[in-house]
Image (tube, rainbow, N blue to C red; front, top):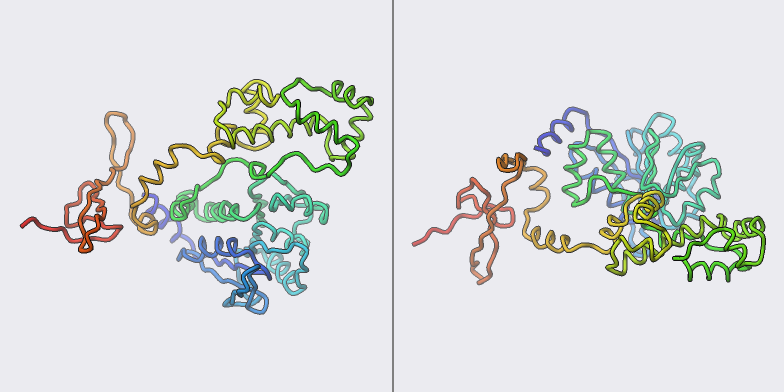
Length: 402
């Protein structure tokens, strides 16, 4: 039914014109994300553009030749700019003028990853919230102080300008665009075709290697080392000041000078970093994390993770360590039909009377021997005869018994 609702929703509107602007040293994966999501959908009209109709790919020696130059932005409803390798590279005046012109006439501007620097250089992000890859959020804020940089967001929708964090968050943002344009059914169908979640939980803090900021000085280095060695202890500002043999006020001032944050904020991030390490590398029960890191009771640990990471400890472990169910899902889905057939075939549901819920009939999986002597799976769906058996998504004539 999702495919049916998707087609109804998409056909109710005129094709949406999307122009993808590839800048020099464009990141291939991010360019591919935009092209895959909008280029393979007949309800969108995609044009890939580049200044001079070509853009280099970093580290490969390859060049992308595009069907349009900067003129391809003039009629676009949405302009998407994938990230590029060197944020220090100068964006040409012609590109910046084309971005400003598109924005002035009402086009929706979208940046993936480091392309936020191009929007910032064009001046269209001034006074707006924005994000970029977590490695570059501080640099974006430093260069463009008029931007409200939000480092822990996967993407930000500010109406006519949208920005995303790094690399694969481009998928999240592009699916969000489909959801905005044509509804949840459309976005869910595209997500299934991509084998991606329609919406991810949490922010990009869960992908940062370490929450603790780097120190610019080492006068309090021994104190920070001692704090890391004694995270489970009930540390407070008085205890830390006594350890450093200075007053609380002096400690707070010097600590902020060296790290940019207060001692207790640094300690909180250090404890969360230790908790993340435990969750990623051990099977220690979540209930013990607070005791091992100093974060406190389980409810306090959950609150700290939701506040700083955006997801619960259990969800974090499931993402970064995986679960036994992942193996089962892989085995079950190994011989599923191609995703384009799943997207185009309406789902058939029935009511499970014993539970009072809707369920989808599961295919019966049989096998047959090919001429090469290999055993090949045949998925026969309920209600289908042997003549409509599907061999990897294709109809295969049944073999009659002699």
